[in-house]
Image 1: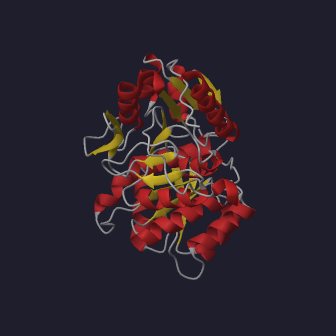
Image 2 (image 1 turned 135 degrees about the vertical axis):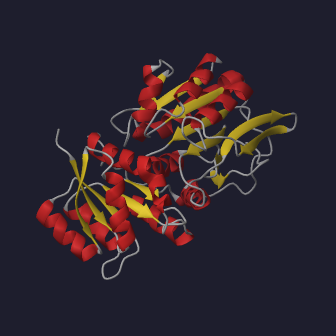
Image 3 (image 1 turned 90 degrees about the vertical axis):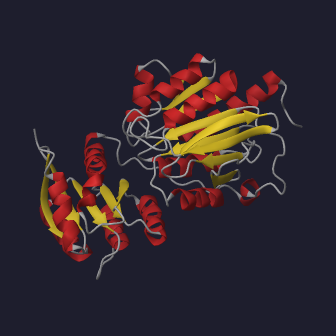
Length: 360
């Protein structure tokens, strides 16, 4: 079988040594070269045409963003950004995803140590996903709603959400959510809770960026946050998110419990919580991502009479998570990404009428 040829681009000599050592543990991957900056990288890309590129964003001469734009525009080769765990690193990473990077991994805080190997499985998995999936480079244009649509409510709902939409998503998620959430109207009648696989330190900025694009309110979840109609709560990186219905309303509950399905936060944890607390009033949506996180949990939503939806294969960057749920027969409806916004709005509007919960 033909091996995946990878070019490693990083100004750090340590990283140019460590990443090839990590990738050498997979016999199906071959590091065909390294480059210390964007100019060297572009020369090697033109000459050798790698299958995948790992790219540092902070480099001399030609930085990572300039290099990425050239790769996307001229070669269409998938790029995995290797990001630093800093606010500046997070900002550059989200910009890179918007430009066209396939995904990202983060460097450990102690990059000088052998802890860099902690990213081994994640990096190898994302390199394989970038090559194996024929739809890996499918991109959706970010939606910018009209100002009148995007304008936030002056006063948020004071009533708790009687229904909830729970979303589990991973690889390809930042761009998919940047497309989906701006399509939801500010009067969206359900509370929204989201697990996006993302490291600690990134989710607050991610939620803030989504909030600036959307008519609904989007924020990183905090313990005790109310689950309200028209509000989306995103699980903080490295913390599980659950919901709890109390007499005065539903709230978000965060925990530092062990990883579930290989993840913290885990979509399985969120979906099981939503199934237990909301039952038939819950809707589970599983979207693009590697692995099988969420497949079991969304089955519990279905078993309680809730509605379950999967993003369709063609519009997924990686079909792993939805595929696992579909194969377990836990999905009632499959919807392309570009139809999800209207489908969700229509679904919850119908339920408003059926259950007589229209607030007007």
